[in-house]
Structures are given as structure tokens and as C-alpha cells.
Image 1 (cartoon, helix red, strand yellow):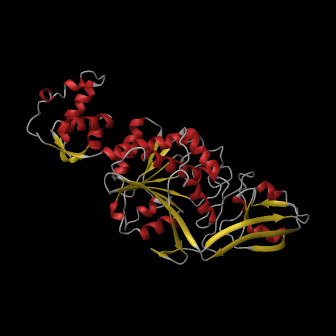
Image 2: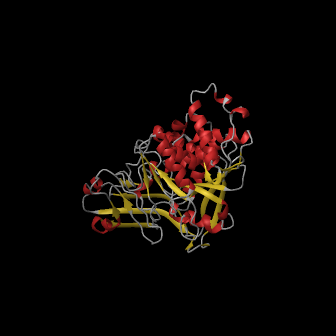
Image 3: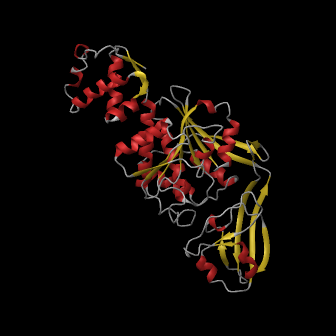
Length: 427
């Protein structure tokens, strides 16, 4: 297993290792990515054959690419896949031809508003071929003949995804999902892969209450495939979080589940507010990342999405400018810290019943006041015990207590532990 160093630096190093690989929704790039992630956490890798029916979808043919370029008549490569995996339209069918620039232009993709950047484009479900390049490169091309070569295969194979499970004290599950299908895009979504990987390692340092299942899946089709293959397990999924765009300099954004009031929604709102980090809470929309699959009406899971700047809200999105300089160790470390804080709350959030509900029980003779004697927050801890006793009716959770009282969740949870130890409440 790869060593654990300072999390931010280690996550950035993992992003740098993954960055050159050409990933898509299928193929050897996904396998190579999972092989590297497997050095950090053990993975169970699944291979699902082409043609497999998964809900309303079908697993597509597998795409692999070895080389691609546009060369001038002197053999100079004007556009070279070896320089960047973004240079080829994802899922391009093979082509080997010579054609004039006028004909080639129909297969070229640029960003006129950002002339030095290369766009990321795909054609997963329509047979097509193409190249992506900087507008300034295209502008410099003289008319004439060009050699066009895409050495790719599109054939029956497999869709590949992986799982990592951190066992908990109960079989109820929290899923953490990230997508592994994008090529050289550091924020979208190599940073999400890195945060998920190091979150799994952090959770394994203790025995969490819930079982945490980490999904490393191709976007959309991967989540759909997992749901189709795990229908019997879905009822165990009590909470979930999709990680994406986790390393840019923007403030944190949490997109709520379709329900809007799922426990993970309330936990994330509480943690972000209590941390006083700049953040934004977004309502659910049926567009985005794989939260829309997990939250589809038939499943309606309590799964939200955590990012920094959301998809398509930053100029570098789906371009070559989403590179290693765009993501920082500090931003990824902050995203990881919020995840850890949120899951610490989720793991400890319980509903209690007051076993002495008629009048206020005498805390002094049970030594509960004495236990606070040396604490700097003794008054706050005392109030937390009173609030827990007041709201321990089997209906209110500790998160409800924290929100209603305005007290820190950790203080409320510690009060519940003390009262439980004194026999005054039960879970």
C-alpha cells in the first residue's frame, strides 16, 4: 500500500500520476487508473461484458486507442495524441486518410473564446471521429493536404469499475462515488478520485459505525451499471455522497439529494455552517453527476454531491486548462477534511429515549456535574446534557439537538455519551 504522507501533497501526487492516462467510459485507461488506485486501497474490480442490459441502457463496446495525429506533408505532427489525450474526440472510430484542410475542418473542435486551450469532447454513442486542438493552432494551418490517423479499436469487450469497502459496525451502507472516465482533467475528476481514495484510507483507521462502499465508476453508465447489478443491496444504502471537482480554488458547494431533507443533506448543511467555511448549498436538479442516477425516482436514495466550483461553472471546465496547476493540495485537503467531519457526524447521529422523562433528573448525584469541573466549556456541556434530555423522545436525533440548541455537534454527542453511561438515556 502506498505510504500516507501529508494528505494534500499525497493527493496531488496521485492526481499527477493519473493525469497522463487516456480514460474513457471503457477501456485500458480505466483499468490502468484502477490499478494505480489499488496501490492505495484494495479494490474489487468488475468487468461487465458489452451488450449487458443495465436498466434502460446497454453496456457499449469497449474503446481503446494507441496513437493519433494530424501531420502535414513533411510528416510534422500538428496535433499529437501522444502530447495530450484531450487531442482526440473520445470514442473516435479508427481513421487513416489524407484530406484537404477544408474537409478536415468538419472534424476539428476548438474553443474560439479561449484560443490557447484544447477542449474535451466525446462521442460515446454515435460513431464519429475527430480531433480537439487550440484555436490558435488551427488558425496557423495553411491550406493543403494533411495525413489523418486514429489508431483505435471499438469492439466487444467490457465496462470496468471497482469497489472498495470499509467495514462498519452495522451492514447499513454509505456510498461514496466518483467517476473515472475523464482523461487529462485534473479537477474533473482526478481530484475526486484522489479525495475518495484518501477518505477511504482515513475511515479505515477506525471502525466506523456504517459500512462505507466506495465506487470508482465511469460517469452515468457506470452508476447505472452498479445500480442494475446491486438491486438487492440498494435497500442497505442509507446515505451517499458523489465527489467531483474537488481540487479547484473555489468555495465548497454541496448539492442536496432529490429529497432535500435526507440525513446527508442535513449533516452537510450543519457541518459547512458550523465550520464557518465559505460555501454554497444548491438544490437538487436532475442534471450533473451520478447523484442523478442514485436519486432517480425508482431508487430515491439519500445521495448528495460535494464539489468546490460546480461543473461548467469555471472557465477551465472540460479544457486543457484543467491541469495540474489548477488543482492544489490545500483545496483537496480541505475537501477531504469536510468529508471526514461530515461522516464523523453521520456516524454518531442517533435518536435517544429519555429513561427519566418525568421532570429533570438529578445530574449531581450521578456525578455528571462533577465530571465537568475541569472543563473550560463546562456551562456549554451542561446545557448540552439538558438539551439532550429534553429532546430524547425517540423522534429527535442528536443533529436535531445541535441545530435547535446552537451547540456544537461534538458537545451534544459527548453529552449523550455521558447520559447513556449514567443510564439516563438509551439509543
